[in-house]
Structures are given as structure tokens and as C-alpha cells.
Image (tube, rainbow, N blue to C red; front, top):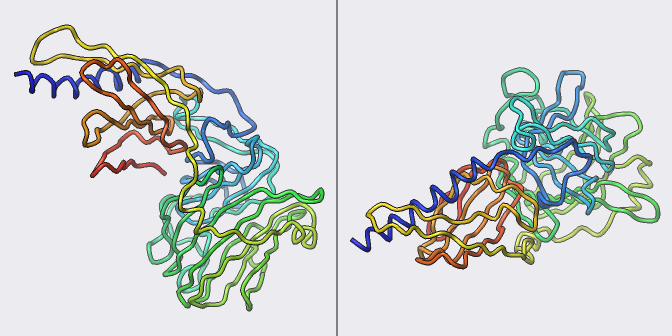
Length: 376
């Protein structure tokens, strides 16, 4: 019976130590924030209300808020449903509201302050037929992704503080990374885009055409051209099957000033290879082994509610690696943590943050020692 008892201990200690105590820990309410706190890492997956336009509330329901500077005041929002760069700002103004930030149902983060640029809720790239009309049904802003033959989000890479987005447009493969640039007293938001073409013309939606806001390009392929049509700034790219890397620049000056802050395009492919560890610190806790000698017992793993990153540990999903002594857990607030030394004594549990920024990843599964979770 000892082997059966050991298995049950390893299973049910999770239910008590992770899940129940995680729920009962309660909420740590956040106040209104101007900047995206560094504790969330380089990005936060969440819906974002970007304000009203002529059509109604401009909402990015599958938003990825990417921090562009150390203070978190400069950010962009990329929409994973439409591949549009929905907005960018450099002076804060993001209110983290609703679940999981403040515990309120029916609300989500919003940005009501000055923006460097904004794009209405339309597809970020034209369809394979060159159409820009949104095919999704429902009131503005529509819900759900575009069709796979139009565009499909493939995830993102984190390299140091940089974020690289991965998606397809038709048969073309795209990598994209936003950044905040400053040079000679000038500043702006820069998008570096690497596209492996499929031989067909492409049209990229840059932003809404608004007074006082400027957008331009650099290092574009021969034959590319800018156009303003139906209130949108567009970039038309000629069809080819080569790999092309170009830049889009947004700012408040003028076109010539923006071009001055352009830099040599980075090798985005190199940034997909991974960088150094972001979350280097570990937390040690001591668990509690049941003193009962029965077939069904409950051991407790002590969760590091006080941790170096100041994040809440409301655990919703977990699974074990093949060694049986290491687990991964996901939290409501967007983290994945590794837990080591889950042995018969539980005297030296080691917790290490593995990932951050996910949108409410309440489920987690390990297959062949690879962690899988679901998050926007």
C-alpha cells in the first residue's frame, strides 16, 4: 500500500496547497494606473477599450499591451484577432480595470489619454482579394478572428525586454517588433516588420488619419507606396517572394523629423532564439507532510504569496513533469511558475517564475515535458 499512498500524496497535496489556498487568498485590488507595472513583464494580454470613434467604442478584445520603455508609460496595443496595431502612446494613461486586475466583472482596461496614433477596429491587413472591409458580424467592435486564409496570429517571442509578434497574412510569414526610439531630442514609436512574401501584393493598415499625427516608413521595398483612403493611412507593398524588413514610424513632429529617428532594421529572426532569463530569483518554502498513515492523505505545498515580483499567486492550473518531483502551475494573473523538489519531505520547495503576461491562463498541461497553456 505504500506505493499507492505515495501517489495519492503527490496528487492531493496540489489540490489543497495550490488550488484551495489560492482561491481563499482573496483579491489585492489595484488602483488606477498610468503606466503598465513592470511586475507584469514586457507585455500583458487583455482586452482594451481605446475610446470612441465615429463608429462607436474602439475595443481590442484580444489585445496585447506591449511595454516599450522602462517606466511603462510608452506602450502599443496589438490585436491578435485582426493583426492590427490598434494604438500607441508615450505618456501613460492606461487604467487596468476589471478581471483579473480589480476583481470587477463587466469591465476591462481602458486608455483615455493622448495617443501617438490609433487605428479603428478594422483588419490590420487587406484580404487576399485586397479588401479592407471587416467581414466579421456583430456590432462595432466585432468579435472573433479573421479567417485563416486572411490572417492568423501565431504567438509571440520574448527576448530580454523586447517582444516579437508572429503571424501570417495569406501565405506570407510576418515577424514584427515595436519599440520606442529617441534621438537628438526627437522621439517616436517604431514598428520593425519582417515579411517573407508569398508573391502577392499586400496592403498594411498603418493608422487612422488624424490631424497632428504623422506616420511614415523607412527601408520599404522598391514599388511600395503610402496612401490615405477612407480615413485610413495605408502602405501598399508589391508582391514578391523575398524576405523584406522595413519600418513604420509614428510621431507628433513631421515626416522628415520622423525619418531622422529611423535606425538600421534589426534582425528579428535572431530575437526569436531567446535571450537571458528574465525572472532569475527563486523563492524557497517548506511544505507540510501529513502525519496520518492512511491510504488517502493531504500534504500541503506552501505557496510564495510574498515573492520578489509582488504578484498574486491565485493558482488555477498545474501538472507534473516526468520526474514526478517538478511541477508547473499557472495563475489567474497571467504567470507560469515552476516548482521543484516535490519529494517525500517537502523541506525545500523551490519556486521560480517562468512566464508572465498571459491572459488568465487558468488551465495548464505538460506533454513530453513541454508546458502548454491557453491564453490570448
